[in-house]
Image (cartoon, rainbow, N blue to C red; front, side, top):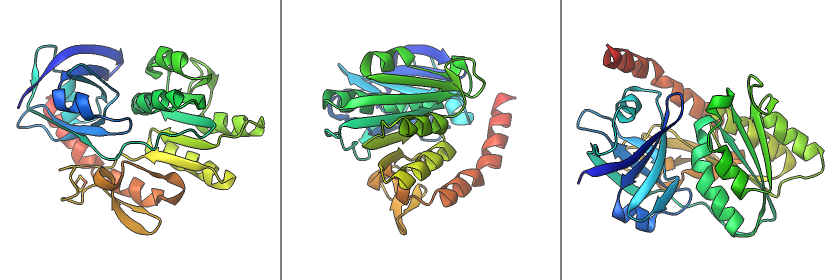
Length: 272
Ligand code: FES
């Protein structure tokens, strides 16, 4: 069944927000879950975390990184996606923990928003550390501002907030004596790895939302396998969130790089 784009908005260079008509997902989606979308018969399946759901529609945010995401970004209001499947994966473990620190990097800031809102609703005190390469890539600042108790912004080039990395801001927070009781980290794999290393050192549970390559999203193909605590897990059915302290990050990073050359070639061919 095709699903219509109700609204589309550019959030940053190469980053787009879509509201897509989908009754079932909007009814059942919980924070932390994702959907798999396919623009047309030639498009690959793209897993995207559900940012928000309301009245028959779901909100997703996509960054153009490969052929399929470019194809999606070229679609406009009124166009229809060939298929949108979800909600998939396990919801985040929302509860009262005390001081929660949510850490988002780049487009990973988007999936962090529904989790942050739910944690706030559960009466947690929340510090958000959001980081991006430049000021214009720092998305959803206002929505986080409205939600959290303490918002820390950082950019790689210093064009907004303090110059540096989210891990440096986390170290500062811990050094100030305001240690988090629990952490959520979503962003580039390398960012989640280093946040998890700090969390392990400080003995803090750190949920990381993994984004390996996915094909079917139902635990059948094995494309999304990750090693957690020495066991093989599938991010689509066992995750997407795992205790970052137990993830074999180096293996995950290696697997993600495996397809980069093919992806680059497909994108070049598409752009011609
Ligand atoms: Fe196929 Fe997870 S995407 S097993």
